[in-house]
Image (tube, rainbow, N blue to C red; front, side, top):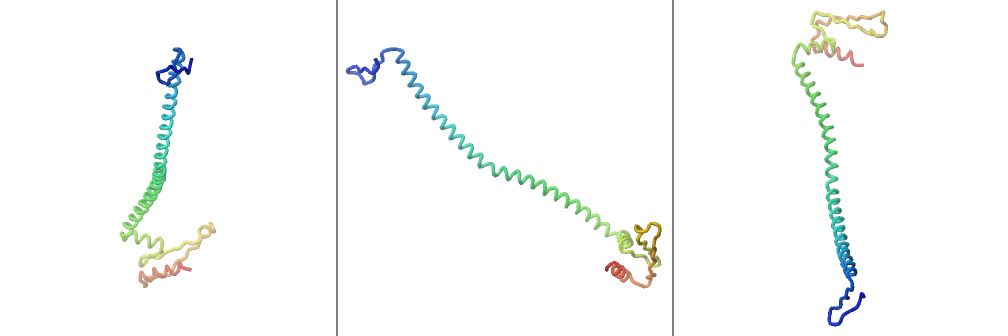
Length: 158
């Protein structure tokens, strides 16, 4: 019987059968296993919480890294565009240092002529295809280059 105490011995109940002893041994081991399993679960949950907190600490810097990567790409595109513009302006500067190119621009854009030449201005070619009007400016042989440029600029302004 379970629960009988023998005199002179400890107060542990006397086990009567092998089956009862095995049952009690299994229940004691399973209690230990349950306690150990609980502790393992708590450690795992604690470790998971620590890992989540560490990962949460890395998320904002990683996000800013990706944002900065996108900004780098747009800044690189802007730099490339500005470099092309710089190259074009550098070529234009080099061309403008040539007297021949300056003369070509003056003739084309400002309508300047050399002494002894006459310029012809063709107007309204798009309006009436059958009729063209040609105007011949008066000879400006006695005027200086600066006066001719100012005159042309005044004629362009309203």
